[in-house]
Structures are given as C-alpha cells and as structure tokens.
Amino acid sequence: MNRAFSRKKDKTWMHSPEALSKHFIPYTVKFLGNSEVEQPKGTEIVKDAVRKLKFARHIKKSEGQKTPKVELQISIYGVKILDAKTKEILHNCQLHRISFCADDKTDKKIFTFICKDAESNKHMCYVFDSEKCAEEITLTIGQAFDLAYKKFLETGGKDVETRKQIASLQKRIQELETENIELKKKVQEMEINFRVTQGPSSPRGMTPCSPSTDLFDMVPFSPASPLLPTPSSNGTELPPLPVRSSEIRRDIFGAEPFDPFISGGGDFPPDIQSKLDEMQEGFKMGLTLEGTVFSLDPLDSRC
Image (cartoon, rainbow, N blue to C red; front, side):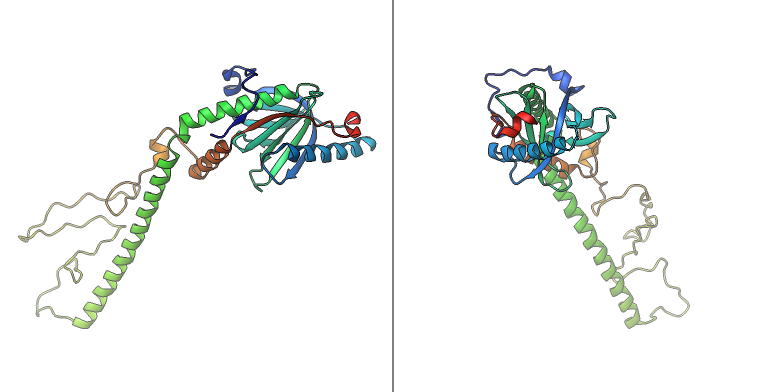
C-alpha cells in the first residue's frame, strides 16, 4: 500500500491498539467548517481551503457568531464529528475515505483532513481549531488508519479477488439458467407445433398415455411441481425422484446457490462486494500525514 506516514519514523503512536479498536479517542475542538477541494491530497490544496474557511469564520465572528464546538471520536471505524452539546452526529468520515491529514507545525492549533464524501464522491476538506493539540489528533487519525487497514486485510480484504471470481461465476450461472428457461420455452413451442401438424394419430379405442411427452419422448418438466416418475427402458417405472423444495432454489446443475459471504467468515450486507472494492481502493491510496504552516495571513491571529 502506498502509505505516506512521513512522521511515523520519529513519532511513536500515542494510543494502545485496544483503545482505537474497542473504543474511541475523543477530542473537543472548534469546527471551522468544510469545503470542496479538487484533489484528494496536497499541502497547497488544504492551505487554500483553510484560508477560505478562516476568512468565512472571521466574517461570522464579526457578526457575533461563535465558532461551534464539536467532539471528534476517532476509532478504527472512522472519524465522527458530533455536536459537543447534543452529541448529534454531524459527519461520519470513514477512514478508507480519508486521504490526507495535516496540522500546523507552528502554533499547533489548526489541523485539517480531506475525506471523500460517501454520497457525492466529492473530496471535502474539514478544518478544525484544536487548542494546541493538532499534531496529536493528526497522529491519532494516522494510527487509526493503520490499524483499520490491518484489520481489513485480516478479514474481508484478503480475498477480494476470490470474491470477484465467485461473483463472476454466480453471474454466469444465472445467465445459463436464463438460457435454459428460454430453451424450455422453445421446446414447448416445437411440441405444440408438432402436435398441430401431426393431428390425432392414436388408434381407435386407445387413449393417449398420460402424462403426454414432447417430440423427444421427454416428460414435460414443471419447476413448480414435483418430478414425475420416469419410465425405464423395459417399461417399468423407476422410483420417483425427490421433490424439489420450493424453499431451496437450485441452479441448472442441481446445486444449491453458493453464498461465499454467508459460508465464509461471517455475515455481510448484500452490497459487500462493492464495499470491499471501495475499501481496497481507499486503503491502497493510503493516508498522507504532513506538518505544514497555515499561518499565512493576518487573519489567522484573529480567528
């Protein structure tokens, strides 16, 4: 994975893995807001976003509006942004969608991260005033990302390609089942046409055998009804085949549908494959941690 934890070499992680895996690390910060950016990474990208949001916050403060406080809850499941008083979730940023995280290496106040929005797929830059613990929060997000990626590999991430192949095979089986239904319809149409063209040909006094057969001397098959006894070559009837249960759908080979997500390592939602692909792509992109200087204009000292 192309990760760029540029400061991990000289900085150790600050929390135990259990704290981020089983719980979360809370931080109370001021939320300057978020702004759409064009790229998932880049120091200049976040600098522009910080400058815009600081200017907007300065205007609001001049109008008497305070910068709202929020609680950040950082864990391996993401970064939640909650209203500090009501605990209402304002934003829920999944870690594999966070691609860039930076803090101000001068006053240790401002930090920001870029996250891809789950609905619009736009890259959004979130900016916070952290009361001189910006670097700590940045490293905490980096540690959570690292742990989440390892957990992803230990669970569903290892066999993403295998799941893709299985999904492809299942799709092919469905196509074959559809083709089989179409072929059955054509055979039934041919049988009807054959009977119409041949007309009644049974000798007088004899009744047609029941059930009737098609032009291949095959007993018509109805998926909704039990299988009928099959005549043998010597005229005797073989024991009837097992009745197909309406609760178990089988493919054209008589096999029950295989669901790798149930018989595998646990229960997964129906859209597991797309989620796995998305997570794999996000973790592969990696998370870049940077320390930079955001104090670029006089507005910084007043915001």
